[in-house]
Image (cartoon, rainbow, N blue to C red):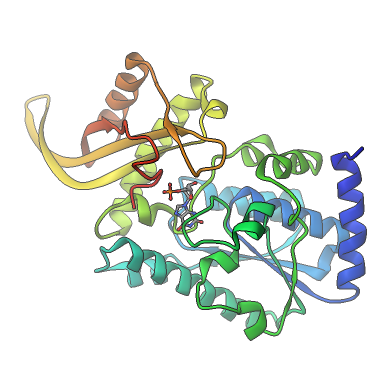
Length: 319
Ligand code: XMP
């Protein structure tokens, strides 16, 4: 008979035993797994933990601020917030191939993380929010929804290179169990129940070249879409919902003017593990409300379409 409260107590004892007086560094992604791992480890060892949040500027609206205030203010966890937006957008300029974008982001993420770890004088342990499915699948780069430093870099051995041992307190858990543990640890529902978000962030939701301007347009459209989903009480029934900003412009009319702006695609799927997925069957009134709001409120978009593709044959993300 096993409860999450017991799991929490056991893991706290395990972490203390493993770490001793050592120093632990943990990369936060903004996702549930790394957040739950960090809060659990903080409960075990307090200020021996430093979190590093590499902010690549490819997060959704307000998300980076949310992570920082939750960790610093609410939990009092030592957190280094690295604003690396310019560095990431600079490197993404000119890249259009999806795998090249992913590869650049993964490599840059590791490079920034490593630099910051050095700046704070290194650590003995690297903490990761690795889950059981990551362990059994031995982590494919695009396979799972969880974001770990390991799955970000396919060049092997960040912990070895930095001479760190791994602390992975969630290795026995599935995603739904991590959410239960997160609630047990007092993480706010908006964090715990959040849809999975890919490590490369909005970069893989902007087919073609990524720019600051296009990220800003997508962030606004995505925020409108998610707000409507939450208002309709549908958020928890959906595995992932997001907007995609297409590199296609179409003609439209706004009042007396002709417009020539980008197309935005909306995606929403149900799934249990992200391996297969079905489209979410919104009613027509909901979709037309979202389309109208996006076109009225987001400059740069004048047409909205809904993606009706299941997985397979489609993938959840567009890239
Ligand atoms: P696909 O698009 O392959 O996505 O059907 C399955 C799940 O994985 C997420 N995903 C990623 N997660 N890095 C990540 O950390 C990635 O490069 C990546 N690509 C896709 C996707 O959001 C979905 O949950």
